[in-house]
Length: 160
Image (cartoon, rainbow, N blue to C red; front, side, top):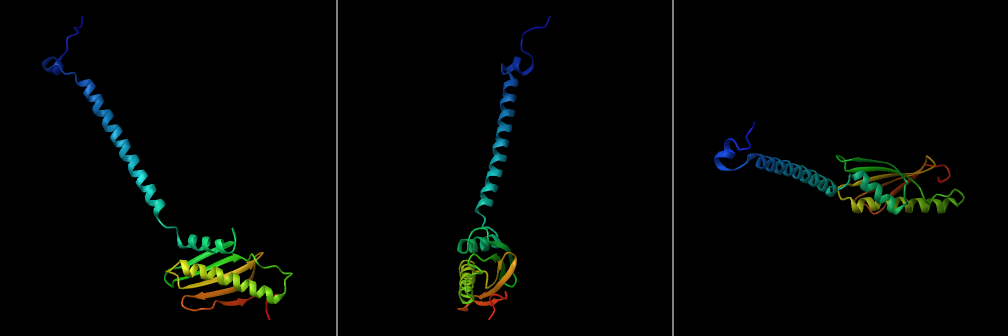
């Protein structure tokens, strides 16, 4: 028959080690879990505070001026401090007179390129390509420090 008397340390001191070991193990596991959660949370917060890529900023700026979902492509050259952007013209309507179309496209290109130059201080040159249904209508170049945007009309309906 086995006896119900405590053995070992429990017999000498009156302390049972099993509950202490369980408590310490649970405390270590909980502490490790909370630490891992904290590290993951901090990484997420740092990622959320990071500014978006210049391509995303330029896309958003042009879409705020021209219209939603018009930007087709954005390329940034950090070494040359230049940006090339291609977007659908929201103002091009082939039934309008040529002079009015040219003015509208020039205004659209000016607004889009100037929005980028004003907001993005690390960009000194913007080249915008205005398209309609996949065909290039015009290209516009804006350079920091110059007052005018240079617009070149490519489509035959817009040439003089």
